[in-house]
Image (cartoon, rainbow over all chains, first blue to last red; front, side, top):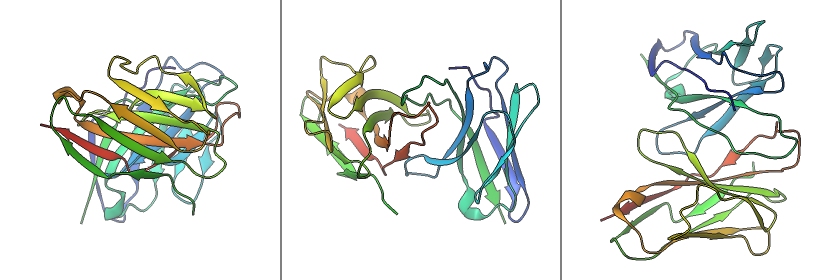
Length: 112
Length: 116
């Protein structure tokens, strides 16, 4: 799986958009970009994933650059409950279920 | 909404003792994973099951760790004997399995192990 680079920490004011960047310059054509988050003392939670098109669901939006070397997770209106560690994971398409390779993620602190 | 169940949530033990963790995946999920998360780091895979068979246990310290999923449903992870360095969060995850690498993994709340 390709390596990802994320900033170790970010702050965001409640109600504002949180934009979390991720670099994955060695991504290959069949690798998906996944985002998970982990709220303190809980298991990771799936947020969203994409291949090359931008994606949106009820939790977030995922913007992937045209060259696919980087992406941004957008939480449109951050709340205090969005305070968590956010993991960007690039995952190879193997044709079968496979593990997630986590880095150290970005610790997002949402403040009043 | 269906969830992955794990027990116990917290376990304190002394080194050299045996400990066991239990996981019940979401009903119908064929693939089950055990991850270990050391404080300040991301989770790392210990073992992956497809039904009752081990698919990947390359990172499992087999001299002291064992895992089983006898009927292809719930699973047990055991450590014997526990060492100080085993203190970590042990996470279980499951997926329906089999799709082209895009299946979402659903994680349980984890078991926090402290070895004294």
